[in-house]
Length: 579
Image: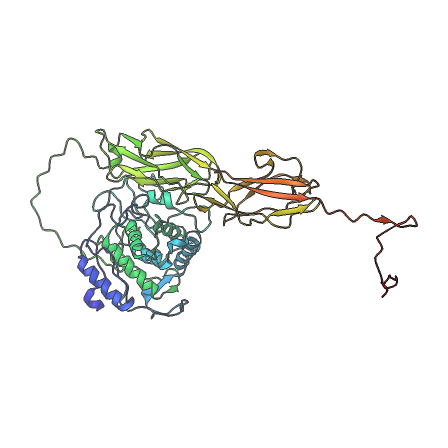
């Protein structure tokens, strides 16, 4: 079967039917019941396909060439095999270099703790890492997980690939004219600027470090609230990384292969990839052919008649979309407002227009949060890059409000241009509750000098949802109709034991609030406790304080002393009626 289908498929040189057949055969031998990819068309997908709202920069790798080796059709392990595999067992292709495997598994654990709804499996990172760089060139990394030499994709100059002008001034890829995909997970620099992580804690976000790159790739795949346990979301995530159906099929093949079993091998001993989708068979970052894909010597060319030179156009065409833009304008109206800790409902959006007022596609727009605020974009960054669609509009990722309240600015600029920036006003308000409800409706009663035995428990909600982290102020007031603070009656106790009649407390994760013990004071009467929250939620609690029952008054005896009233006893004779 393997000999019949072949081990390698090249993008653009192999039909979708062959790919589908290969994947179907692989699924039949390895993953019964696994559905094929949703999109069975052949060739590359158009820009924007694969996701309705792709993460910033459209695709992580800039749709650069990738390795297309398909996994062997013999699976490394049967279903139900133990999760911990021996170190040197199974087919060579199932071996993942130790540091690379550790990076994938660490990224899964980290992201599952912060975004459990994404359901990121480390085997998906392994599938992408296999296809993009052959697991960091077979695990050629140092003790910190950094590749022994940079892994670089081809120059993205529009000749056979995308045309992406330089966005990092050559800092990562050494090219100050055009971008190149970088590192074992092949991020283009502008995407790395948004998604880059410091996962190994060395103080640097290094795309050539497998720990940093794997963490960034995992976050990128989880963007747009994807659930990777859902097939449609899984497909969209992979296509957002490199928008090609054959790329999707190849990654899914390796993903299924690693899910059926894998084992670690020493760093530097992983199986190197063979063919690449641009037919070059060259390991990224090298200028010589990979040993697994020898290049045949080219035949001696036959003499030909020189062609007549074509006339040089007087005005060279503009290839950089940003050069066409004369202005950007806001496509978001008004001030964006959200409660602390909540996600903003609207997204910041700008539109890029040319001299004729028409929208410009493919323009990189950089959004930057300015000022002293802990609000961040949903990806956890203060600065992100988005790309304009066919409408000329580029929307930033959603904003997540921090705990610091107040207004601040977000600016939007065109990357590589000095056009006037668009400035947005963003406001974070304190956490709110529009309703406070007492859970125990018992009458609260105590005697002077004592305390109230029953607790006061309140639940806060906002718009029907649990309102957590809301600051609720509890105040003893003059009366239900007079909110002026009371100067006597019941009170709380401060840490030093002094009486406190106004207290601010915060609701828990379940929206609940339990008031501390209430002391009755030395004055009898009916008193009112008022609880109020930002957002309008209020509730009043009535407290009754009574004086203790007086002790019985003793009566005087004939001798002048006082004693209780005498009562009959067995020793005192009583008169009985006669017959």
